[in-house]
Image 1: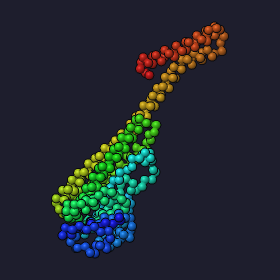
Image 2: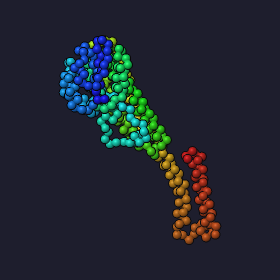
Image 3: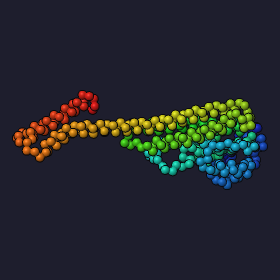
Image 4: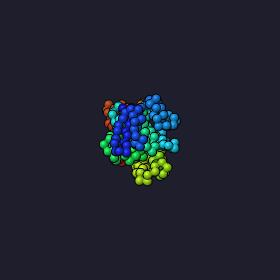
Length: 334
């Protein structure tokens, strides 16, 4: 449904509409939450005319990839948050690194217009948890929409931050998988996997820092949220946002650690190869000297005319190679 209107009047009655024309028949003292899932400019312009919203705010709503922000338009607040969308864990997606990343691949914008008697939430694409908030409104209106538009805004932002925390667990699993691959399957490991994960986490950190600034203002500024008790709830959400930023920082460090592990494993493999080549070269050098000496054009060379000379020389070279290998083994060089 592109549009859902939840209306709660002073008589304690909750009504749910899907047509904007129903707004004309609603009581003036009603608390309204309009949830919109659409990228249609005509619909948003109609909403703007109905609620007297600024055209620049509508433009920001319809801009993909817009970063979090908050603006005070006097009669209402305009905020943009970004919700984390859990990436797919399929094998094909894990091994796929795109040169051009879709602007709303990992996060999706949720715009909020917050006034005294109404709140409007907007997303251009599906955000499943926002539908879950709507189901809470239906089930327990006395604990949600009855408390006012500010309380609905708190519930939306609280769930957004909570889902953000859960989504980071997927990156934790991805980093663990990359580390296991770097150690157990280094031939299949590619550095672009790590670089892509680090880039995504860096973007999420930047987003969360901006969102924390918004939540801090909601928790501290009385001109934005008047009720003191509700500002305390926003303070709790701010603490969760700080924890998310800390978690992302740790995941970025872990991603860099995976890269270091891969380079360390590559150096170990290179060292093993060089050690094997050094042993082969060292064992072959004495035999090459013997072969070079017996390849000289002289008439007098020991054992050159002896019928068993060839076999004696071969036996000596074999003993020389075995002795060299024994020396290496005794000194723990191989």
